[in-house]
Length: 238
Image (cartoon, rainbow, N blue to C red; front, side, top):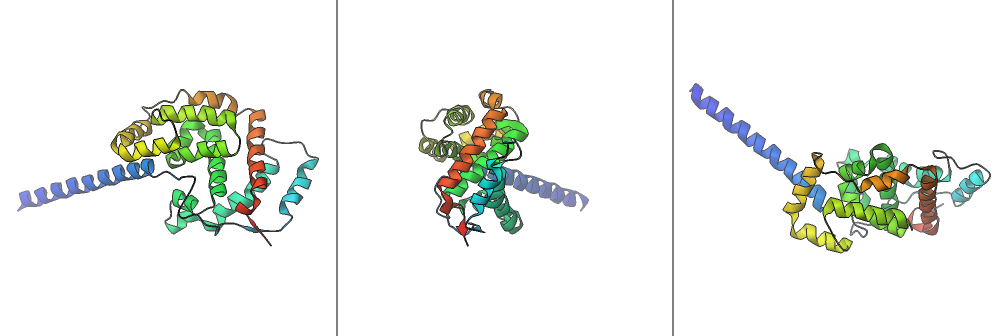
C-alpha cells in the first residue's frame, strides 16, 4: 500500500513539474512571437484623455522663460497628462490584461509614444539590455517609433542592436516572417538571452551617448514635437 502511495506521489510531482515547464515555455514563446505592432486590430480612441483646450499652451508658457532641466521640463508635464495619467486611470494590471494588449487598444501614435517613454525609462535604469529583456514584445515597435519621430541616429544604431539580438533581417516584415516560420529557433535565442548568455556589444554604442544631457534633451524634444504634430491622436478637448 505504501509503495503504491509513493508511486502516485512521484507521478503527481512529475506531472506538476511538466505543467510548470510547459507553461514557462509557452510564456516565453508568446512573449517572443507576439509583437506589439505599429498597426493593431484592437486600436481605438477609448484611452484618449479629455483635457482643457489650451492645456498645452499653458505648459508652453510655463516653460518659455525657464532653463531646460534633465528631469524638469515641458516634456514631463506633457507626458504626465497623456501617458502617466492613462496608465494610472486604466490600471490594466488589475484587469488581468497584459501591457501588450493594453497598448494594442491605443491609437498608433499613442502606441509609439508609450513605447518610447518605456524605452527611455528602461535604458536609463539598466541599459538597452533591460528594455529588451523586460519588453521584448516592444522591441520592433521601438525601432519604428524612432523612425516615425525622426530619431535618425538612434534608429540606425538600435537597428544594429536588433540585428545582433534577433539575427540579420532586412525589414520589420521580414523579421515577422522569420518568427512565424522559425518560432523554435527564436525561442531558443530568447531563452539564451534571458539566462544572460547573450551579450549585446552593439548596445554599448547607444549607451555611450544616451545618458548625455544634450541627447536626452533632443530625445525628449522629438517626443514633444511628435505629440504636438498629432494632437488629436493623443487627447480630446473639452
